[in-house]
Image (tube, rainbow, N blue to C red):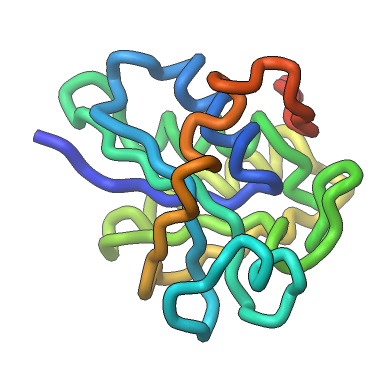
Length: 163
């Protein structure tokens, strides 16, 4: 049985790459796209212009018998700076915000618990700014963005493991 998780943590290319590398066969699929905005069928250019309200996100279909949602949320916090508003490295704008889009009330509860734990253990003096909000409408990114860093291994990525 699979479940869906959706995360925004800066450029979606790196987020997808890190989740695939860490969880591999525990993921049934990954896809990059856009969530949290107010425009139907947004394009990459529109999202980059910052006019749609969307975040670049990765949508994970994960195998519940191979990995739990809490592990995915904790890893999400490990691969980006959750204390910067609308910024990851050189990527600046609301489309790069730190956000967990939950799909169920249980995911919301788990995300809040993990966020509190990470705040205490890894950000004791700096507030985490990660939003935890319902997923709403999700839009797939254009085909050339899917598995981008696997197809373009020399591509740029701001992400790194933080602990």
